[in-house]
Length: 169
Image 1 (tube, rainbow, N blue to C red):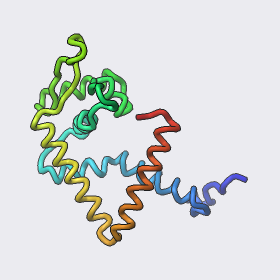
Image 2 (spheres, one colour):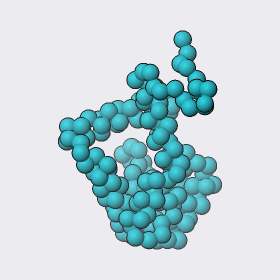
Image 3 (tube, rainbow, N blue to C red):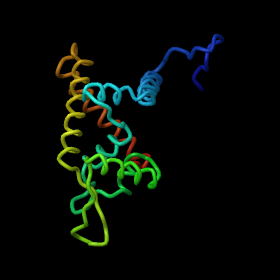
Image 4 (tube, one colour):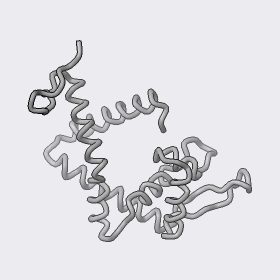
């Protein structure tokens, strides 16, 4: 049986199941991401103009390689951000010009280039992480530590399952 569609006045029906409530929450999260709410708040907290797409590239490099012995490349940045490699290359080049990333010859294969954070890039990533974590702390200020831990555990479990089923990194 399908769920009810929009009501006559074009408002979606209230969630009638757990899955519907999760769907609604995910739609709200996606809308917030589209508006770049976290990015704008992070930029404000960092006290200066930060190119959010460039910051995403810095975060992608900050994650490090997926497996031991691998290196972070422009291709991995593109995969992590879900963008075309040419777009990733432009973002990486901008972050290099801004002094946040550097290209380094691969130790495994001198013909290959991998990416590393500079000290400035590391400081930017750390400041942005602190800003976001402080925001989460403010959003959950009335939550118990147990509730916070449960959200972290369940959200990680959910995103791991999503990654496994979709094949995304």
